[in-house]
Image (cartoon, rainbow, N blue to C red; front, side, top):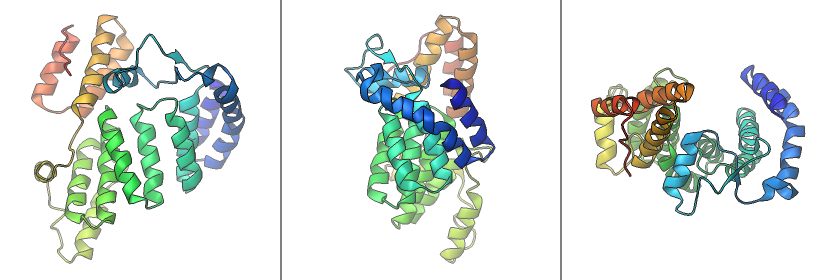
Amino acid sequence: QMDRLQKAAGQFQREHYELALDTLEPLITVLDDLADKGPDADSSVYDFKDEVDIELAQLTDASFRPDGYMPSLGVQALGRELKADCLYYLDRADEGLDTATKALRWDPWNAQIHLRRASFLDMKRDEDELEKELERTYPLIARDIDMAGYHFYRALNLIHTQRIPLGVAHLVAFKDFDTDHELADVDPMLAQLDEGLHHPGVFASIDSKEAKRRLRRAGEHYGPSETGKCALMRALEKAVATGQRDAVQDLASRYRRLLKTQGDHDRLEEILAGKKVSEF
């Protein structure tokens, strides 16, 4: 199963989306059989992407016990997430939305899958459901690129519902978390909005500090939630305590990209020194 998934992932990276779907099809059939009548049919079976998702599960679901779940026998969430990504680039919104929804059965705490679902809702211009999906997603965000994705789709949601100034503030906030233009370059979008509203440079000149002020004044989210921050810190604390060097490096890098204040950086140094600082 993993060989097939890795092959499909390589095809996806080379932008051969139809080919990747063909490679995934037999795997998805096996996963569906496991989900319907195999050991994976047990409702306590999950397919977590990493330890942060497990921490999010404990923080957001009082009934979840880390010793009470079983890992998937397949790659239920990951396989369907990759299929959904392919469908997104092929503009197949209905099938993609169904696939992303199924993927969430296996890891409902995965912000990336929630954001992929949001992308299909944006395609379909289902603005009410998109707004609800983004609210479900926000507490689960523990990566900079997911934070950027949240700000991007919230911006589109607001712009499409004629709340343009707030949408612009989210586009500016997006740039704080997608510094390498991994998802999008929003500067042309800001310039286009300025041109369309006949006030050249007004939106394009808004800086991060002003965008953050506008969002918070309007009751909009900026940056990660306390839940997301706590989950990331807990996972990092456990990795430090158990000497998982690769996990420590990965999680510390994620922390630095997501949390940017001096206080955040001071807490990171305390965690790396073995102190427990996470609170919720």
